[in-house]
Image (tube, rainbow, N blue to C red):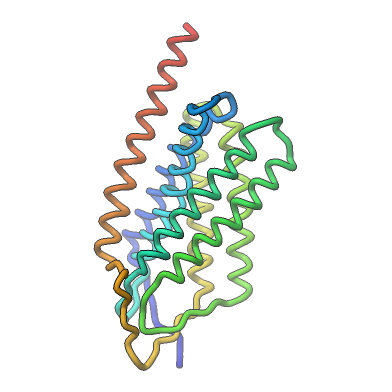
Length: 246
């Protein structure tokens, strides 16, 4: 059979990019504290930056973009794999930030941290794809599959370098747009690699399946609130630091 015809909702595509930029900017604001923080404070900033980048810029962007992908068949999402993909995104981003942000800066740390994070981001994407519950079979074009992994690694190296080499607010703001574009590039390349062949019989949704409408609500509301809170905390930290220096 021929692959399923698909199209994109342009508004959701744009929104996926906007959310990725918002998450990247928040992560940059939080990551600047990682090199000098100690004890519990360190883990607080690290977790916040990992959530903003992995959970906001990467994972939330991924699922909004998935909702933008329209096919002529019903699609829902397995909640277990969905939560697993979220956990992977936050975990690998946090580890990458720790590898690059702590200790003496070096190319080895940067490339090693970026390679680990990039492979983890790719694993998150394809775990999220595996969470699709639909009456179809899913496979991938090897060339685009490989390209998506290369993009994920390159984007991760760039993101980690930017996280610890920028200090100006306008620099971070501009870099967030670049990081958002890189994250989207990985996702949409991965989607272009997908070959979805409709099946003859409907696939029953598992008990733990989550509808696209509910998932969209959770992604929009929860991520936006948490990113806003994290950004407020980062700005208050910057204000206190300036006051202390004065």
